[in-house]
Amino acid sequence: MHRLLTVSAIFSTLIFPHSSFALQNENQLRCLYYQAATRQNVDIKIAECSYLFPFDVGKITDSLTFYPLLNLGAVISGRDYGALLGGGLGMNYSFFEKVDLYFEGGSSWLTDVEYGKRGEALKDYGGHVMFFAKLGLQYHLLTNWAVGYSFLHLSNGNRYEVNPGFDGHGISISYHF
Image (cartoon, rainbow, N blue to C red; front, side, top):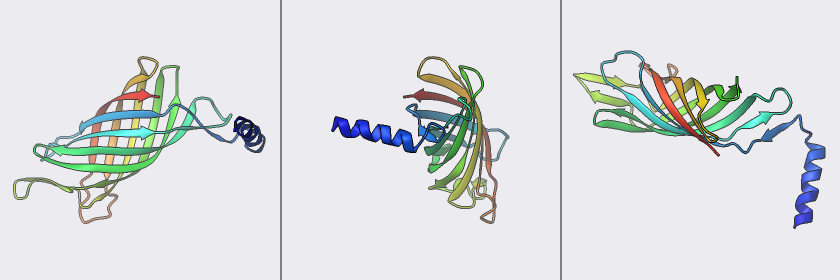
């Protein structure tokens, strides 16, 4: 078995040279908490955790990584809440040894689309399918831990009658493994 693994590793190195895509062993779990960037008729907050599993782009640059991501979270408004499940793609650029800039985008599914009380104050996202874009910075405090800031835009992309969207400022904590 050991010889088979060695031969497979040599064979894959010859067929897939270093300039091809390669998986990194630095997966990341990032948890974020967002508050609305503007005053709204219903106070909405979003809490989510993302699982990122990056791959690098060969020898283009050592600082640039791309990654798929999976999101699981909640939209929270007083006693109302709904689950948020989604995924997408991200790009990370390391400016310095401890500072990263990232951009992520994708789609999400909301289990509940209305928050608040009809006739009083109501936030209606229009439908269950939403799209998101995030832009953020993170600072590596310790070997495996980072903290950061990000801006989130969540919208249904005008797929429904109403499209109020959500723009929020968020803080994050990440664990790299």
